[in-house]
Image: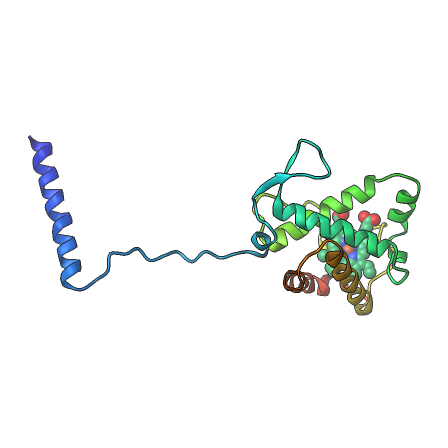
Length: 188
Ligand code: HEM
């Protein structure tokens, strides 16, 4: 009985509130929360797809897109005489058929770009950008990079991204993310 009375009061309140809103010409339509698309979403986001390089495994479409650009770019850089001199350890390993360093670099670069473009399910576990590009802290980096080297890296990144079919619009957005690292990477 008590419960019924309480329910009656509650119902009365709801009606009163709704009437008041109507009287004041207030709308009861909820305000839509703005949905912010991250660059990671534009690259495919968290939709799971089959991983073309690991049979039976699934991968986030955004990560697959980023990894494809990263791997393609590493190959462009390896063949670029303006930049490949910075990577003697990596190139010697690959030439000797040891892909472990390449795989670590690919994973670290992919994680870095996933996080930088807005992915939520990955974290970057490599060195910070300053240390990674300081030959005194990273023996795999042969010499300090100048602005011109960074510019060339961007040229190769664009070429690598085009090779895997990334649109000019997305390449432009990735370029903006890359630019944010220039201050740490250029140390000459
Ligand atoms: C454009 C933006 C760049 C980004 C976002 C970037 C990012 C990275 C990341 C995440 C790593 C891995 C660090 C680790 O494994 O702990 C790395 C390594 C390295 N980066 Fe960069 N980098 C950039 C530009 C450059 C440039 C301009 C050069 C040279 C001119 C360069 C040369 C290297 C070298 C030599 C390594 C070590 C590779 C190895 O593991 O053997 N990077 N970079």
